Structures are given as C-alpha cells and as structure tokens.
Amino acid sequence: MSDRIQKLRGQIDRLDDELLSLVNRRARLAREIGALKNGAPAYRPEREATILRRVTQTNRGPLSTEGAAAIFREVISACRSLEQNARVAYLGPEGTFSEMAVLRRFGHAVEGVPCASIDEVFRAVETGGCQFAVVPVENSTEGAIARSLDLLLATPLKICAEIVLRVHQNVMCAKASLKSVKRVYSHAQSIAQCNGWLSRHLPHAERVPVASNAEAARRAAKEAGACAIGPDIAAMRYGMKIVASNIEDVANNRTRFLVLGDLEPGPSGRDATSIVMSAPNRPGAVRDLLNPIAKHGVSMSRLESRPTRIGQWEYYFYVDLIGHRSDPPMAQALTELAELAPLLKILGSYPVSTP
Image (cartoon, rainbow, N blue to C red; front, side, top):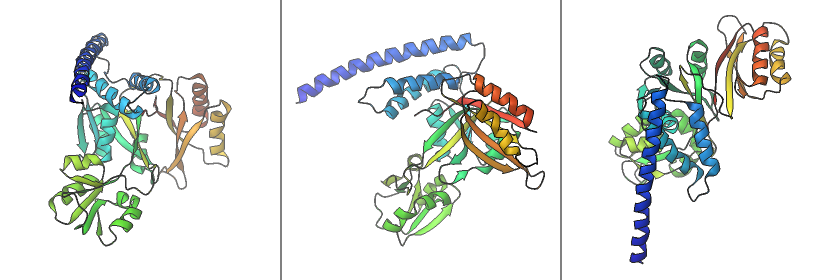
C-alpha cells in the first residue's frame, strides 16, 4: 500500500512541476499582452467571463465545475496582477458577504478596501482612490437594496460585471460546541434567514442583532457563552470554529452584487444591460415604454421602481435586459426608448455571473 502511495505521489509531484511551468508560461503571455495594451485596464470582464465559461463547459471532472472555476479564477487574478495592482472598494468591514463577492469576482490578487457605507464605496471609485467598486443590489428573499439603486442614477460609473453569491449562513463559536451558548450575535437579516434552525437548536438563546456579521463574529470571539451567525470568511477572519453549516431556512437564498468602474465591456456572448428610465405622467406611459423592448424581441429579467423624490407619485424604473447594448435588437430598442422616455440612462452592459 505504501509503495503504491509513494508512486502516485511521485506522479503528482511531476504534474505539479508541469502545472507550475504552464502557469508561468501563461503569466508571461498575459504580461506581454499587458505591454501591448498601452495603459488600457488590465481587468476585462468579458474576456475573463469567456475563459471561465469555457473551463466550466469543458471540465470533465473529477473536479466540480465550481472547483475548476475557482482554480482558474485565481490563475487569472495572479496574471492580472502582473499588469495592474487593482484596488476594489466594498461595503465593509472585513469578513462579510461583500468581501466574499470581491474575492469571487477578482480572486485574491487584488487589494480589497472596506468602506463604512455604500455611499463611501461609490465615492472611493469616483474620486480615483480605487479602480472598482462592488456593491449589493438585490437579495432573492429581501428584495432590492434601495441605496444602491439611488446612487446608480447619479454616478458616472458604469456597471461592468455582476456577481451572484449563494448566501450560506454558519454558526461559529470560539469553542467547538453549542452546549453553553446563551447569546447569538448576527446581522438582523441573517437572524431572520435562520429563524427555523435557531428555534430548533437554540430556542432559549438571546438573539442580538448587530451592524454586520463581521461585528457579530468579533463580539462572539471575545465572549464566553456566545456564538455568531455569518459567512465562513468571518470565522476565518476572527479565529472562530464553525459548528453548524448552511443553516439558512431558504436553501436558494442569493445576493446579487454589481461591479462598477470606468469601463465598458464588449460582448461576451452572455450579457445583460441595465437601464433606468422615467415615464411621462399620463395613463399608459409605462406600457408604452415597454413596447420597444417587446417589439424587438428583447427579454426583460427585472423591473424595479423607485420614487423620483421630485414629484408626487412619480417613479424611476430600473430594468435589466438580456443582451449587450451593441446587439442589433437591443440597440434598436434603446434608440426608441430614448425618444419616448423623459430620462433614459444606460447603466452598463456586462457579462452575466459565472460559476
């Protein structure tokens, strides 16, 4: 048995050497491409999305699709860092789902910059302190993030990518046991998402809402008889042990994040276009605005309204469309919309989220 293991390990060592050589060959090619860009951004969302889709489509296992994508995401991240050391602003603190979204999109070879509010995330990129921003825009169970929608209307930044993050809630403690737990810290939304599990397993524990899941982990790490609920990254950041995983009541709970920057990606083959528009204050106005979309066969995946705060009962309509703005049907629909809507702003065309 031991001789067989040693032989297999020898094969792994030789493959590791080959992998390292191939990754460095890739890095040299990426650096050469970077030199030819003449200062153009290193981050090309459409190109990275195409690579990851090809990897997931051609993967034959035994690695899972998500595992294969994660490996290539980090290879891409390391190669990208040879061209540019990107700074990415996100809603902090460290150890939150927002930080996980940054790592999911950009890999670990970037500098994440936690900000105290969504407003500060936008401002960090608008003033040039960071190249990109990652902001939450909607949750599958809680709905739209109103502040993100309001700021999208005013910012000069463009949406250049999206991240759809599966929300897994975990119980973490300083010790690997729930027996002595008397208090549970977490963000209010996370507590609400785990009511069923808490009622079954910690029915007598006090539930204490705090500003973030990271703050919950920080407190629980220092307090006897306390635990926290949040993402596994919070446990890692604050030296906690995960004692129960995936305790959320809704198994398919997801949060969608947007990547913002001074960048307009080209078509990737699977894209979305986000717009915001207003409607004239007359009967049938919204229906008339939707007609060009239907007329040119453009699919709509989301429609959200927000009050304008200018006139009573007047609204902005945020719409997600399937396709790139350069696709002929989309381009024709947008041209007609511009003639009908008092206000039309194209927030960006970008590749849809990859695994």
